[in-house]
Amino acid sequence: MSELTMGQYSLVFNMLSFTIATMLAAFVFFMMGQSRLAPKYRISMIVSSLVVGIAGYHYFRIAESWGHAFTLTAGKYMASGVPFNDAYRYVDWMLTVPLLLVELILVLNLSREKSGPMLTKLTIAAFLMIVTGYPGEISSDTTTRAVWGFISTLPFAYIVYILWVELGKVMETQPERVRVLFRNMRLLILATWGFYPIVYMAPFFGLTGANVTVGVQIGYTIADVLAKAGYGVLIYAVARAKSENDGWSLEAAH
Amino acid sequence: MSELTMGQYSLVFNMLSFTIATMLAAFVFFMMGQSRLAPKYRISMIVSSLVVGIAGYHYFRIAESWGHAFTLTAGKYMASGVPFNDAYRYVDWMLTVPLLLVELILVLNLSREKSGPMLTKLTIAAFLMIVTGYPGEISSDTTTRAVWGFISTLPFAYIVYILWVELGKVMETQPERVRVLFRNMRLLILATWGFYPIVYMAPFFGLTGANVTVGVQIGYTIADVLAKAGYGVLIYAVARAKSENDGWSLEAAH
Image 1: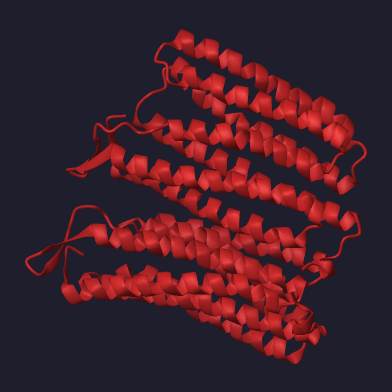
Image 2 (image 1 turned 180 degrees about the vertical axis):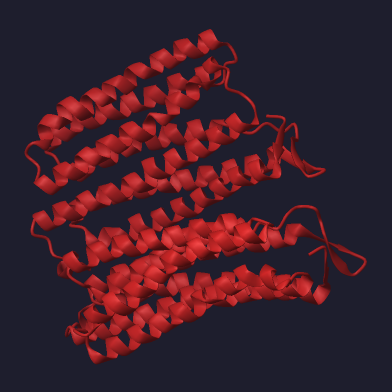
C-alpha cells in the first residue's frame, strides 16, 4: 500500500465520509424516533444511537487517519510514512458489537429471567470474539493469524448458536410481523458479520496491494453501514410493530 | 479552474458558509418545531432534520475542500494541486434526495397501503437518478456524459409522473390549504431540481473557466438551500395545516 491513484484514494475517502454522514443521520433518527415507540421499547433505540454515535466518531478518526497516511505527489497518493490506523475499527467493534446484540435482546422485551442470562452470554462472547481477533490481525505471521482467527471463531459460533437455537425457541411466542423482522435481522447479522473474517483471511490467499486495500476499506464500510445503521432501522421497525401490537397509540405520545 | 480572483474565491466560500449556517438553523427549527405538530406529523420533521443535518455536514466538508484546493499567491487564488472534491455533492444527494421524497409522503399521512408502495418506488427512483448521473459527471468524454445523463433522466421522469399523476389523484381528498401547499412544493421540486441537469449540461455548450466554476458552485448552493431548508419549511406548513385541520390544539402539546 505504498501508492494509490487519485481515484483509489478518493473512492475510499468518499466512502468514509458517506459513512460519517450516514451514522450521524442514523444517530438523530434513533434519538428522535423514540417518541414514536411505546416507552418500554425506547431503550433499544437508546442503545442503537450509542452504536451509530460510536461508529460515527470512529469513522471521523479513520477518515483523518486515511488523509494523513498519504501525500499527494505528482498526481499520485504516496504513503506518507504515518501509518493508517486500523485499530480504530477494532476499538469500535469492541464497543459496538456487544451493543448490537444488546439492542436485539432489549427490543424483544423478554422477561428478566430470560433476557438477563442471554445478555450476559452474548456480550461476553461478542467481546471475546473481537479481542481474540486483534492479535492475529496485527501479526505478519500467518500461523499466529490462523491460531487467533480460530480462537475468535469459537465465540462467534456460540453467538450463532444462541441466536438460532436458544432465541429461536423464544421467538415462537412473538407476533408474526416481529418474527419475520427478527429472521431478517439474524440474516443481516450473518451476512454483514461474515464479511469481517473474509477480510481477515485475505493474507492467506496472497491478496495484497493497492486494489486489495481499497476493496477491504470499502467492504468494511458497507458492512458497517448495513450492520449498524441498517440493522438499527430494522430494530426500530420491530419496536414499532411491537408498540402497535401492544395497543400503544402515537396519539398518546408526548 | 487554475486561477481565481480574490472576489471569485471569496464569493464561493462565503456562499458555502452561508449554507452551513442555514442548514444548521433549519436543523434546530425542524427539531424544535415538532412540538407544534400533532404527533403523527412529527416524523416528517424528523426526516427534514436528517436532510438538512446531512447537507450541513457536507457543506462543511465542501467549504474545507474549497479552501484546500487553492493557495493565495500574489493576490490571486491559484490551484494548489489538491483537487476540489465534487463527490461530496453526489454523496449528499444519494442520501438526501430519497429522504426529500420520503418527507413529502410522510407529511400527507396516507394509509399504509397507499404510502408503502409509493415510498418504495420514489426512493428507488431517486437513488437510481443520482447514482446513474455520477459516471457522466466525472467523465471528460461528452458522449459518456450524454449517455449517463439520459439514463439518469428516466428515473427523474418517473418521479415527476408519480408526483403529478399518481399523487395528484390522492391529493383530491386533502383539505384545500394542504392542496395549495402541496402544489407549491411540487413546483419547488421541479424548479430547484431542474438546476442540476443545467449544470450537468454546461460542458456541451463549451462553458468552462473560472466564471463557470463560480457560477456552478453558487447555483448548486442556492438550489440546495431552497430544495432542502426552504422545502422543509413548506413541509412544516403542511404539517401545521393538517394538525389544525385534525382538530389538534397547540394547548394540548407538551
